[in-house]
Length: 395
Image (cartoon, rainbow, N blue to C red):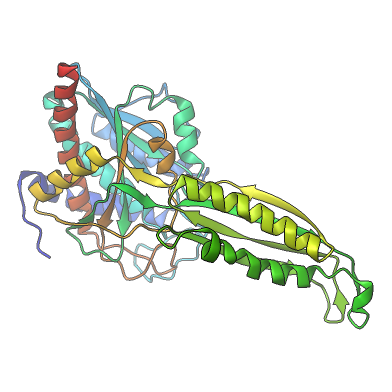
């Protein structure tokens, strides 16, 4: 679609070549979670060149926090982008493809970072007009679901009223934004089950306690959680994704290990699935004479959008001439959810018209979405500071 160009979009368009250059530089130099040292240094240079203050009191090993505004008394809001790449070998064939073998921005965090830097550049020009302060969180280690916790531990959100973020969405056109109140992305938990049996010659199975047989029944039984313990009006995913066992065709092994992931959108459902999972693992193991050790690997909770913030975002998007849609919740996880446990938060899906889904080796975005994203969050920040400042004055 052709996006209607108002003042914010026109302003973003003027810096679009710079944003494209930033995104391509980041795309060429991806760094994995907790290793984003050069990425952090590059972001720092971009902010310093624009005269944007960096808040060094919030100490992070990688990633950084910056701020614009605060010249007048008013609320503080935060905008967040994630900065890490993935251990994926790039197959895009782009002239600015990753220069680091086995590493790639296959989830679009280069896009998120460039767009947020664009928002910062736009807001810096009108800093004296802001009715409060905008804090910029360039967060590390989202792919490990560990970066948000580090930002929270630094104290960077202690005086923040609300936080806003986004993820690119390849299946939405440029100029379209997905806005939903309530659950948008899933809680992403993991599990590891170790089964101990007794090995034997494959021709003498009665002398064994077969962990493969146990594992096979366990995989099937675990599927009953979704079909029989979760209401048809609710949703959950239980996926066993790996099963490791055995060394030879004629040997029944002693051990089997299976692992995978559980996705849920509601904390009550999450608790129910977790409890039932443990019961099935222990019950099936006992039924076949094996012993089981379950390691539950809790991930981020569901991304749960504040209704008032979602409504404000929708008003801003429509004012910019963007197409607003209500997206289906995504079973992918996002550690932005940890922020929403502490303060009201809003997370959007920004249309990027990509050829492939997240984490694909040929993943890419339409760079026309950079200016749209920067303009949307700049406009949203201005309007939200006005709204929250008015609320503050009435309190």
